[in-house]
Length: 326
Image 1 (cartoon, one colour):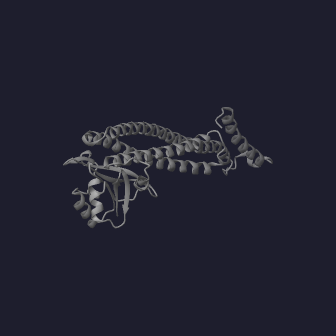
Image 2 (cartoon, one colour; image 1 turned 30 degrees about the vertical axis):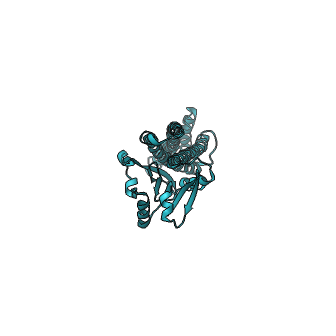
Image 3 (cartoon, helix red, strand yellow; image 1 turned 60 degrees about the horizontal axis):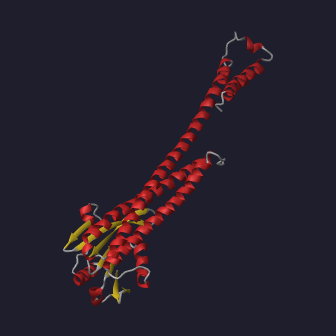
């Protein structure tokens, strides 16, 4: 699908659906979403620019993500995509003084929202470079919103984890379910932070690359926006590092509570085995069938044996209690 934007008297105008070649010739931004072979051929003929393939924008080498050919910048950036699970999808950017081409193979809310707001004048877009910088600002803002959401979820998880140490959790099974659920939440947050970090690292490379290689046709205002964007990316990276440290702390705390729960189970089993040894020994002694055992002829022999079993079971319990082991 092709979406084109032209600039009429400094104001962007959106064109969608079946686009004429005349629109493609004058468009300052052409967005290609899962383009067909025919659409790629039409755009290449109209712009005389190479449209990168999905394999090309998915390359991870720095030289493949950032390159310049005949004064045109070819850039690619992994973006966070949320479906049932978080994953990254790559987007390609082709930028020169005359136009911007964006290539995507998965629909993304950032591009759709930016494209809807662009004709309203919500974002300055008097040329391809301004649109490119506006897109990067929208991407960085989206990543910042994602980290803020992760922080809120992490605060909720932190409260529930440390509340276990001071409140009755309602039983061992409920505590086990909560710990298992907490590990799943921490794993999901770790994935989100990792994908956001990947986007931010690559965005942090794109911004200085554009600033350096396009400085001849970037205005002072756009250079200032790039400098601000660079500082924003750095601050988000610092916040990402902080969340990673907090996530690791919560993971260690959760695993610590799991170890405590396992130790409590082992302590109960150990106490049960120690308490059960003397009564079993007494029962084993009086379970031997020998005629020379005088207790067999006692009228109170059964009560004597039963009493010994009870007393020898209580003595270890009292000893553990006296030492505050239970």
